[in-house]
Amino acid sequence: MNIKSTPLGKRIINEMSKPYVIAEIGVNHEGSIKTAKKLIELAKEGGADAAKFQTYKAASLASKNSPAYWDQSKEATDSQFNLFKKYDGFERQDYVELAEHCKKVEIDFISTPFDNDAIETLDPLVPFFKIASADLTNIPFLRNIGAKKKTVVLSTGASNITEIQNAINTLEKAGCENLILLHCILNYPTPDKFAHIRMIKGLKAEFPGYLIGYSDHTLPNDNMSALVSAWLLGAVVIEKHFTHDKSLKGNDHYHAMDVKDLKSFTRQVKIIDRLIGSEEKKVSIPSENISRENARRSIVLANSVKAGYTIKEKNLTQKRPGTGICTSNWDEVIGAKAIKDLSEDHILLWEDIEKKR
Figure 1 (cartoon, one colour):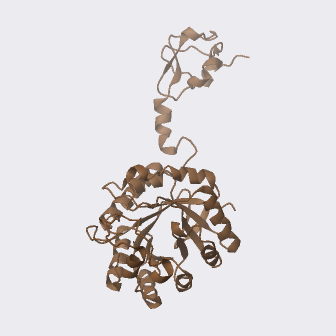
Figure 2 (cartoon, one colour; figure 1 turned 90 degrees about the vertical axis):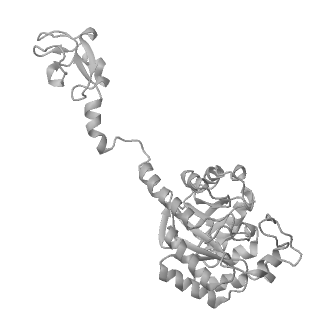
Figure 3 (cartoon, one colour; figure 1 turned 90 degrees about the horizontal axis):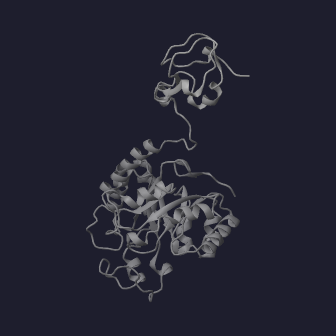
């Protein structure tokens, strides 16, 4: 498998693309369709390509004895089951309504499924599937998603290379043809020192046939440094939790970005994309032609010479502009004969000399 371009929602992305930005609303709507629609609109306003939700039922996701693994000073709920139960009220028609609202707003609708019923609910609604890090080793679940033959975006938090390769093999054997891997750290939130964004380069090296992205859980700063760094290291998909109010209590509000943060990132992407350009191979570009001609040096006579004189190194110097014989031809000029009388400070041209034999 050797994919360098991948369809993703309304876009085709490759290694030179501006990032495809996923605003991970998740369950920050807290069960309100009205809030969910507001978040979709804010994601579009901020410049995201997709508004993403999470589709699950607590009873099929976690046992009643599943412990909390998040910062309980921010989210006090003491079990995964109880936390998921708070926000699992949306039914199929609600996701249809949200997908229709995304279409109206002109942003891709995405939702991460967490069980087989969710896969079936979402299949007709989403242009691609996003798989959470926690399901990277869930073989039957991966098979069911792969069988849908849609593009898959797979988070790789808390995994190793062997586990990632096994997930890839499972998805592809089941029918998945387009796959993107996201670097991710499963800490909520992720301290900057644990973000290890350089792992993006490692994933690119380990899986050269696949596009790589980044799912971020660090606390946002004014410069959105984590997202910018990830993109510059090669992440062409960027996913981050998204909220309308970072001061709200709850597991996914306090480390999320808001519309101001998202605008900051998309604004920086526009600036940086202009700066880095599209050319990787080092070449002289057309706008440099005037500088190339005037700032480079030509071979110039240090003193006047008569016709027939054999030019020696002592007769030569190097001066701007570069409109004469280039200084890279220095050795070719030494020993050549002047065809005509030439004055001091003359910029040598090839027609001034007879090349040595």
